[in-house]
Amino acid sequence: MIPFVLCFVLFMVGLFGVIMLRNLIKIVIGLSIMEYSVYLFLILIGYIDGGTVPIISECFEQGPYVDPLPQALVLTAIVIGLATKALMLSVAIRLYKHYGTFDIREMNKLKG
Amino acid sequence: MIHPHGLTVVAKKVCQFIAPAIFLFGIYISLYGHLSPGGGFAGGVIMASALVFQVLVYGSLLEKLRKEEWRLEIAESVSIFSFLILAVLGLLVAGTAIFFGNFLPVGKIGNLVSGGFIPIGNLIIAIEVCASISLIFLALLIYKDEE
Amino acid sequence: MEIYLIIMLVLMILGSVHALHTKDLISTVISLGIVGFGLVISFLILSAPDLAIVQVVIEIITLAIMIAVIAIATFQLEKKQWRFSFVFYAATIVFFTFVVLLVSSRFSHILSFFGHHTTRMADIYMKSAADSGSANLVTGIILHFRAYDTFGEATVLVTAVTGVLTILRHSGKKNKN
Image (cartoon, rainbow over all chains, first blue to last red; front, side, top):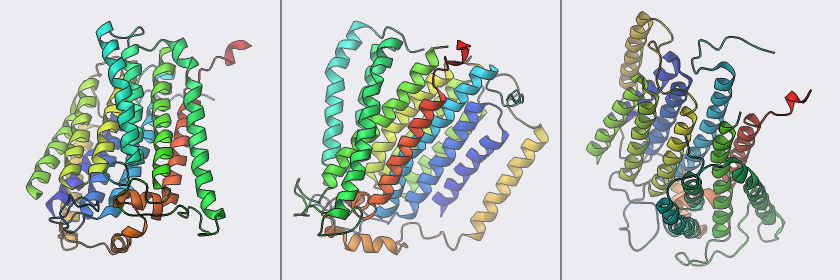
């Protein structure tokens, strides 16, 4: 119960950063913290007490296996998270070259 | 920020020894993905980190890096196209007429040659992920230096 | 095992709070590294070695990309870094604390199962795991039972790389005329 609540607190810290901050790099970092908390929550759901790594082998003791389905979902999500972070940072580079600052309050001149 | 001529000679010599070993380690992890922890994505990102390591040590001379970029684009496009061909082959083979059906023999669990097309799929995914992440790194590095 | 997980989560929360409150951009990026590497140790505690390998290498590449992006600007921030006033900042903190307490008290009887098995779909995967022929169950799931999702993920990667190359293309053709 306590790990789930702490995971939710981590999500709220990231959401607070996305809403309240002015620097564009810090908004991207807040979004990244939200993604990490969601990955951890998905793995926490599938955990079994005394469970082992989900690999069929003579080396590992044959206890109950930890749930492999959330691990397969999070495995692709981690790599896609890197791609979306790179896309956001490339947009940030373009905005810096155009406006000269990372501050989002200065970026209010819509050009055609 | 990245030095245009790279680090000192000592770092360049150490990189010549270590970067191929990291690349080989990535291929090993992605090929044994059905027997031990790892798989296509883990092997692919380890191969990408070998290329990133080389760019960080040898510097970012713009003209040289821009001339070498088309190889990564071709590798990425060819690997994702061959993944699609692997999927359609499962549809055409008469044993299992399912899209992405496993048409190679399954074999005994624990052997290296087992599990249908899982080793081939791991290798194709590893090449694709390596090319994508290296291309992202090069794009964010080269295009920021020019104006 | 639960006490180690709670220690790692508290360290990650402290690192993320420091990342959002400091005025120096390099300290921010390094504090994001605290959250990322704490996640690696949490994955190893929860018996997920595939994810730990992927998360370590991707965290290193993320830190390298972020420092390369920060280096095109100055490394110090201006004095004020909040979008709205101080009253709104305090009210938002109070509101978020209230939301966390409300959600944790409302769902306490659903989420009190940490360590017990609840999902039904994964039982089918674990019983028929030998049919796929691979000893690693996670690789068997992503390449035999759910290979279509892996194909979609590869497509998303290619699309994102195309987007990055298009946005950062050297725009030299506009100044010809």
